[in-house]
Every structure is written in structure tokens, then in C-alpha cells.
Image (cartoon, rainbow, N blue to C red; front, side):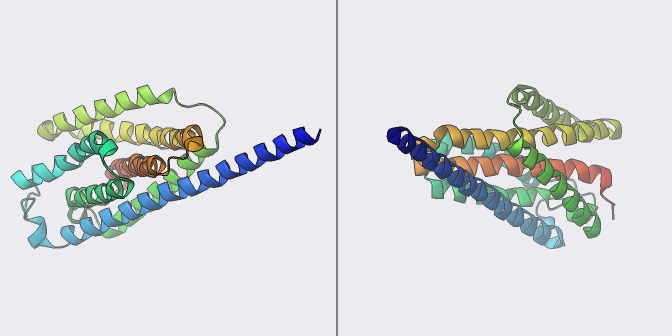
Length: 245
């Protein structure tokens, strides 16, 4: 009996340690994501509210991107793929620095919204997105339901959105843009819950390894995933609720 009590006490201690580690891990994920979001919107606001800076990337009258603008537009996508390929060679600190550089470049690519939409509507849509994101992420964290099966469908949806968005750059179809925005909100809402559960489950599977460097990089990758979910949901909602200048 004494041996059983000792084993039960040790198991309880390990469980408590994992729970505490999970909370710290998720705090790091959300904290890193929040800093990235702040950096993105500061860069976007600084460039978007300064005509001289914005003209480096876009025509001041039509807001059509020039050559540098096209590079900046697709740079975040290229950086995401590069991040995945380089992750094993980066330290946790290097991965975090890369994420913040990515967030700054994303700010450059989004700077045009401060010219097209009113500041009040941008703030309102940001608040709507934040509330929706918090609820969806909380669901993904707390639900007992396994939603890992959503992953394939959602990733295929993202690929479809990307292709449709590139096509619509040239078609400029308002009907297609409406459909893209509606589907985009639904897909990234699902991804918010899916990614949150995946981040939690990944930590629980790897916590016993004690590899702090790997867990540190996993937190950065988790922050990147949730950051992308938030940004995309915000941009699609802005198409619906944003008031134009």
C-alpha cells in the first residue's frame, strides 16, 4: 500500500509539472504572437500613414503595387516556407528573431489598409477579430473532441483560397472577392481551433523529452500558426465590415 501511495504521489507530481509546463508553453505562444501582432500593426500604421513611405511600394493615386510592392506582397509567404525549411538549423532565439522579422515584413504588406479603410473601422474589425479568435482558441484548448481530422480539409481550403486570390488579382471580380472573404473567415476560424489543439497536443506528447530548445522552437511555430490565423481572419472580416475612406 505504501508503495502504491508513493507511485500515485509521483504520478500526481508529474501531472502537475506537465500542467504547469503546458500553461507556461501556451503563455509563451500567445505572448510571442501578441508581440508579433503589435509589431505588424505598428509597421503597417507607420508606413500607411506616411505617403512618402507608402509610395515606395504602391502608386500614390491607384494604390497598385509596383515591382517592390509585388515583392513585399509575396515576401511573407516565401518567408513562411523558408522558416519551416530552416527551423532545424535555427536556435530558439534565432527562430524568434526570424518570426519578428516576418511580422515586420507582414506589416509592410498590409500598410495599404490605413489608406483604404478608416482608422475607426480598422480598430473595430480588430476588436471583432480578437473576440472571435479568443473564443475559437479557447474552444480548441478546452474541447475533449479530437478535431485533428479537420486539418486536411482546412489546408486544402487555404490552398484554394490562395489560388483564387491570385487569380482575382487579375480578374478584379467583386463577386469572387466576396466568396473568397466568406470562405476565408470560415476556414481560418476552423484553423484557429485546430491549431490551438495541435499546439497543446504537441506539447503533451513531447513534454517528457525535456528538450527545452525544441519546445522553445515549437512555441515559436505555434505563435506563427496562430498569428497567421488571426491576420487572415482580420483581413477577410475587414472586407465585410471595413468602412472605406
